[in-house]
Image (tube, rainbow, N blue to C red; front, side, top):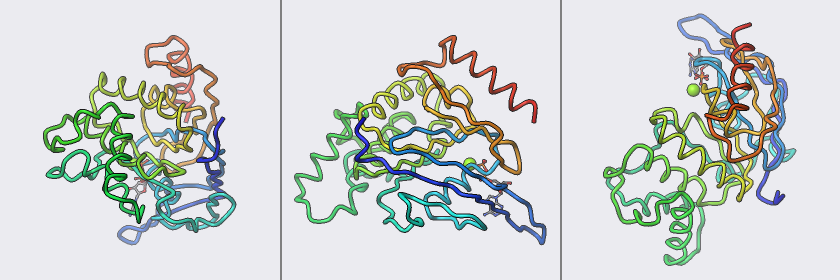
Length: 254
Ligand SMILES: Nc1ncnc2c1ncn2[C@@H]1O[C@H](COP(=O)(O)OP(=O)(O)O)[C@@H](O)[C@H]1O
Ligand SMILES: [Mg+2]
């Protein structure tokens, strides 16, 4: 396995609470886990269990109340470009072309000639199946295609970690299925370290190697599940359905 692009993430005894109108509520309660280089891990839990808060802490845009997060054994002090975030609604520029949006992802890569920026962007557009749409405007695209552009933009600077906050949750089921297939293929060839946040149990099973199941508010890890199924899995596989039922039972117990 090529692990050169991978990074190890350690989340150590991390908690977080928020105070609103004088009332303090615990959002995350003593979270501990680590993610190996090149691993694809899903953070699975109901809305409000603290998934985005945790992902933002790994991204370094939210502070830890206690505990710490280590990336490659150092205390979150790597430059931002090693970690790329992708959100439910990706902040693409609708009036720019597809390729201009992907090249925007390369803005931290200084000193390349313009032709090379374009070549890199085209390569990642081909990876997500949009090579022929390079010169389309983003507003002309469907929701699924927009998320493909956002994925190409996130991949383009060759980051070590991809932090994905429910990037497919606004898409219809059949678009999601295509994207799951493509994502498995892309992850298998690029072997990035991926932290994938979702409330969708089947999505977590289809994509991840390991699932951290969170309790509802406040978020705690109630179960860690290794998904020991071959790639190219789909939400319709019997083995996926069986694991889905097992996870639902775990969630219902809480
Ligand atoms: N900036 C904030 N100020 C106050 N409360 C917040 C803030 N961010 C998140 N929360 C609260 O923390 C909890 C977890 O939120 P979040 O991480 O967004 O959950 P999830 O992504 O799992 O839906 C929720 O109860 C939410 O209302
Ligand atoms: Mg969220």
